Structures are given as C-alpha cells and as structure tokens.
Length: 259
Length: 233
Image (cartoon, each protein chain N blue to C red):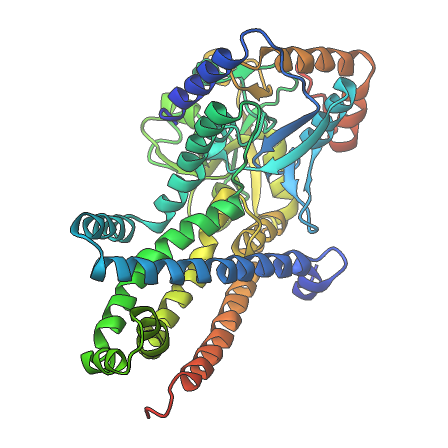
C-alpha cells in the first residue's frame, strides 16, 4: 500500500506537467467496490454487483449526469487499485478515518452504522468487556475500523484477521472462533442467512471518533477534488429530495444516515 | 433451499459457476500458446544466443520460477499498470490503457509458463540426437529447415509429457486471478458460498468441475502424444 503513493504522486505530476489548468471532463466514472459485504454490496447469482450502496451510488451518478460502472476489487488492494487508476471512486462501505485520509480524498459521510460483537447462539453472556473476553478468540476483517478497535482495546484476546468479513462469520458458525466484530447490518444479514440457531449479536459497540470516524464516505484520488465536489453536491441533493430515505427503506428497518 | 435448487434452481448459482468455468478454461487456453512458444524462444536463446542474452534469459527463468506465482500476478496487475500509465502519460496524454484482471492473468501466466516450460524445451532439444541435425545438414537442408522440419517435431514428442504437466499447473494457477476479483470458477464458488453460507457445496462443486477439466485434458494429452509418437513405441 505504501508503494502505491509515489505512483499516484508521479501520475499527478505528469498530469500537471501536461495540462496546467485544464479541468477533466467526466462522462463516465468507474466505481470500485469489494462486493463481499451484503446487504451493502454483494454479487447476485447472475454475477451482478447489487446492494444498498450500489443503488445509492448509481442514484448519485444519475444526479451528476455521468455514466457509472461498478467493478469488483478485493478489500486489501482497494486503495492501491484506486491510486493505480483501476477505477475512479471507491464506494465500499469505507469508513472515513484519519489514516486513510492521508492516502485518499473522502466525500462527505453518507451513512454510519454501529459495529457489534456477534457470538455463537449457545453463548449466553452479553458481557464483551476486554476483561470478559481475555483469552478468547475474536475475528474480523483486516484493514478495517473493527480490526483497529480490537487491536487497541482487546490486547489480551487473540485477534484473527481475515481478507473478507464472511470468513470470520463462517469461522464463528463452525466454532473456530468465539466472537466476531462487524457491522451491525452485515452481521444481521449473515445471522439471518445462516439460520439454524447459529449465532446472535451479544452487544453493540459505541462508535469512538478516533477509531471509527464519522461514518462511511466515498474515496477519491487526492487530485480529483472536482469529482469529489460533484459527489458531495449529489449527496446533499439525495438527502434533500428523499432519495436516501427511499433507498434505505428498501433495505433496512432502521435509519442509517447518521446525521 | 435444497442443494439441488441452490445449484440449478431459478435463483441457483450453477449458472455463475458455469460462466466461471468458461473464464477459467479461456484463460488457460489463451495463455498456453503464448507460454509454450515463449518458453521455446527462451530455450533456443539459452542454447544458442550470445552470452549476455543467455545470462538475461537465465535471470528471467530464475526470477519467475523462484517467486510465488501469485506475486508475479500482482507485479503485472499493479506494477505493469503503473508502468503503462507512465508511458501513456508521456507518449499520449489523456489515453488510458486498462489492464483488467483477465488480461493481467494472461500476461502473468504466460510469463510464468514461459519460465517453467523453457526448462522442458531445453531438455527436449538436448535429447534430439546430434546425428539427426548432422544428417539434415548433409542432405542440404538450411539451418532453418533443419530446425523446423527435423529437430522441432522430435523435440515436441519428447517435450509433450513435460508440457502436459505444466498445462495442468496452468489450469489450476488460473484460480489466482480470483484474488483480483475476476469471476473465474473459484471466485464464482466463493461468491456462492459466501451468499448462501454453504461453502462445502460450492467449493465441492468447483472441485468437481476442475477435476472434470483435468481429466478431459489428460485424455487430450494422451491423444496428442499418440499423434506425435511417430511409431516410436
């Protein structure tokens, strides 16, 4: 990841050298997502990328009047892929954090959900304090706010990091690990799909600003400030005209706008 | 849902698995000619080229046989893309050449297959008796005709089993592009298993398809070996 930054800077330098002031004309915008995160973004049986965030991003594109296409990109390479120009924007439930903001440019926050601890259905305890989870194994997706949270506060637990959120979920279901930390809605989706009294949510985690940030935003290359401004205007418009509420009602029972 | 309807029902994942299998087979079939021809070229250079070129070829095979195939793929997908962007920015500003996961797979796997198969080709070229070459020359064949008409067919016969092994490895190595989110057979199976939380069913199904492709390739290889045997056995 660190190596990708000089390339971005070089590309920026090359652009500045050839086009001193010309603004880029956006007709099509390529969006990248890690479609392993139902109900926000996932792949359906026909191979199409679907989900709340996909619908939302497409609604924003319609407001900006650009044609948008989605492409799938694994989470751990998603920022390098953006910086390498594989696509132009990340819409992938990426929480806005100070660490990421050093590499990418974030849009305004457009949704915020609570992280949760999920555990096996047979575990009756709702106590998820670091003391109660000492020596337990907790799984989550790597390079996420959840991984940061666990590494900051649960030093006496064994933390297992996975490439996607599905793997810790399946490991919880098969009893390999004791707890999973993940997004409340993603965990709810998994627990419902798995059925059979597999798992349950033990506790919600209060968002801490230094770790979790304000919520989820779209990520751009540092030099694409105009594109970011276009999306920010569309985000405000989607709030004002009810697009966001209409879309979220299709997927969720709770309000996730986080304003 | 029963496992049958999960695979073959209207909302089943069998279709995506089948599309994935097509991507897997296409990737292997497109890569193989480049990889095998590249390997032959490297082998000939290693045997006949001036020393600096030979050293370069040696470095190339040592490098790509020595690093993980997955790493080679990442070097092509991320590294080569950055290089292409820089060249494009210098030569034709505004033009954006995209190396997608499939193209990166073809390039990376061709490089890997070339490196591995060059060793098979060298051994096979060396196994063609010297007398064959000398006889061809004394019949008045040009060096080029000697190679194409006399040496190469015999080399091919000796190289086929080794190349067959590399083909099998290539078939399985295609699954590496699933890490770039390309929808190959393995990726389709993992999408299906994550969406249905039934990994055993879908990884099992993917395994069965890989096995079927391997068995068919094995039969094809045996037929090819008979075809090129030329009455040797």
